[in-house]
Length: 351
Ligand code: DAH
Image (tube, rainbow, N blue to C red; front, side, top):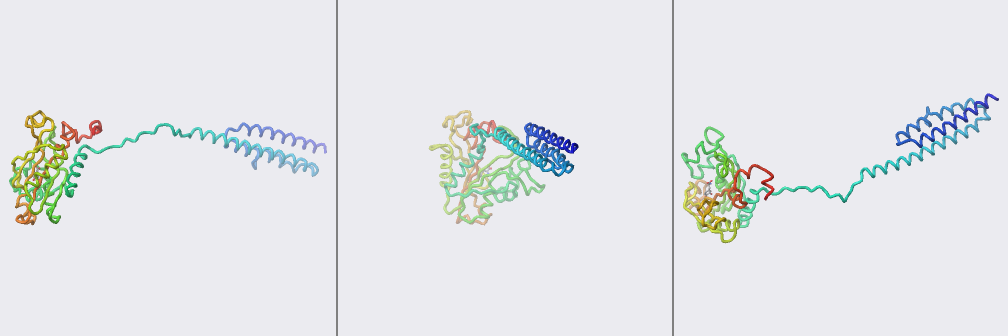
C-alpha cells in the first residue's frame, strides 16, 4: 500500500511537471510548426503525457479513477492551451502577411510607353487617305517580281538601261526573276486581275543597285497610281496630282509639269512642286531651282494597254510613280535618308 501511494505521488508529480513544462513551451512557440511539434511531444501517441497514462495500469483499482481524472484534466488543459496559442499564432501570421503584402494604391503607376507610327507610315497613310477619298483602291504586290512584268509588259525592251545587271538585283542568270526596281509592274498586275474601269494606288518597297548616301538607298518606297477609264485625259492627271499636292503641302501649292521620257507612258512628264522653303525664289533646299521634283507620270502608252488585252481605242489611262522617302523627308524636314531606316529611337520619337 505504501508502495502504491508512492507510485501515485510520483505520477501526480510527473503530471504536474508535464503540465507546467508543456504550458510554458506552448506559450514560447513562435509559429504553428513549432507548436505542432510540441503537440506531438506532449500529447502524441509516443508523447510524455501518454507515457504517464500507460503507467495507470500499475495503480490499484481504487487509485485509478482519481488518477484518471487528474490525467484527463491535464490533457484538457494542454489541449485548451494549444488551441489558444494556435489561434494567437495564426492571428499574428495573418497580421504579418497583411503588413508585408499590403498594396499602396496611392503609389503612382509605372507609365506604359506607347509607340507611334513611323514617319514613313504617317506620310503613306496621308497619301492613302487622299486617294481612298477619290475612290481609289489600295493594292499590295510582290517585291520579288518577274522581269516581264517589271520591264517587258511596261514597254521597256531588252537593252533598256534600267535592265542592266549593274542597276537591278536579279535572282537567276537568265534575268527572269528580280527584286522589282519600281512599283510600275503593279499597273500590269492590276490590268490583268481587275475589271475596267480601274482606279488604284500601289505602295511598296523597290530595289536598285545604289550606294547608300544621304539621298540614296538600295531599298526605298514608291507609290504607284493608275486610272484607266473611257475618255481619260492629261487634264484628269494634272487635276488629281494638284489635289494630292494641295492636300499634302497646303492649299495654293504650285506645281509644274515638265516633259520627260518613260517607256510606258506617252506623253510622259515629271511633276515639280514649288519649294516650300523659299516659295520659288531658289534656296539651298531646292538647290537654287525654286522647284522640287516629286514624281514621274504620263498617259499610259497604247502598247502597254494592248499587251494587257485592253483596247486603246476604247480605253485610256494615266499613271504616276512617286518616291515615298522624299515625300516624308519634305513633310518632316528630314535631312538624311539614312535616318529613316536606322531605327534610332532618338530620331523616331520626334514624330
Ligand atoms: N516607275 C518610274 C520610276 O521608277 C516612275 C513612274 C513614271 C511611274 C511615270 C509611272 C509613270 O507610273 O507613269 O522612275
